[in-house]
Image: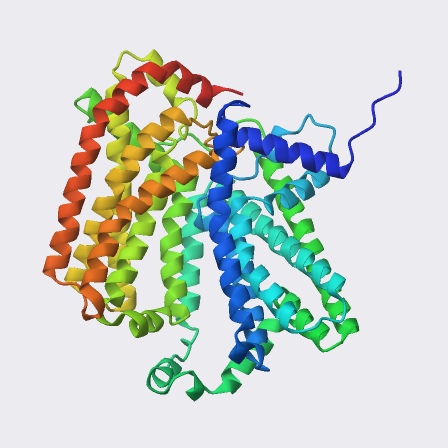
Length: 551
């Protein structure tokens, strides 16, 4: 009896897309499939508007007739798209999106082919469609105005650029998960953050004096040599090869465009090779048996807990503290703040927002810090501690206390994270008033209850298995992700409304009081829906247990 033929690459790619879709549903085929498709289309909808905007921008007469602006816009979008795509797994807390190799190890597919198929499949997720939309719209708009020498080559260039972004995104992702797997991951990340802070202090800030000039005399007062040099510099780095090659095609220089296409392909191949090496290293490390370190010699943290509830709170706090993913997410807001100062981003916000700039920036960073901590764990509150939920079901305790303890620790983590980010902003930038800090903290106090209330229900209706070792984690369903984003947006509305009312004059004590009042209402809303969540937990306890402990 002859062996069946091994599926080809396209068949593997199709199977991988199907498996990702079923995993995203988290319930198998059924009536939820239609909802998942609807959510996929809705979450990709912003890409359509972004694409149309940049398409129209490239067709504007002042831009289309310029010899500088089209290339600057294209090269800048290439750089921004590449940067966002590479850093998104970290910024969005998706650092454990790497499970294909372990999940599909029994499939008739080589690890390298699986990596390629997984990378290509990632290009057709909703986030990818949104990320590439501005550049796509700008490229199509540029091609509609300028006749390209070889239109087919432009399509090839676009595909190579997309593959370049996806490949180096995997490099960043696998480098991070290798660090998280290390025994001393906290020290490595802390040392890296300190080194980044020290290195950034020696880099001179970007000159932003042109903002004042533009504000007084308009765009025509800009020194065009600055824009020209920026466009040339952006076109000389690998992501800018795509924008520069489109310009070469418009000038009829097909050979130069072919060389740049070869450059895109080369750097994409290098990225795939590095990503493969990092991924295989991670799985070799994850597959080792035995303990990864010595037994901790710390004193028993439960020796001083007087009640069962305080013991639960202590346990949840320790789980959150020792979670490698939480350590990584805690560093992201500080990295963003350092980059903001390095790029003189505050000057741009001051130009746009006036005296309210520090409140907006401080509030935005604090909210981001709270959201990545609170939402990441509250929306999978029964799965992020591995087999912990099974222990709770077997123990003589009320599950209501378990949920309350988890919520209390997650809220404390989000608020504590926001306080640290706010104080870091004040010390590092040297700007920001007490009112700005109070507005930021009140905004966090408004968003955290919404995240907890939504997270409780999402954890019960969309439970996800999670391996604390980062060896494998199921994907969060797209529907759950969108509902979580909606809850976070609703929690951020009071801050946005209050700051818009404050205008450019800056927030006042009344602004802080308004946000604090909304925070109190959100806390009352959380308290109101908590009994309902507890009743749902009792009904669905077995289904949640099956979902978070399945293999």
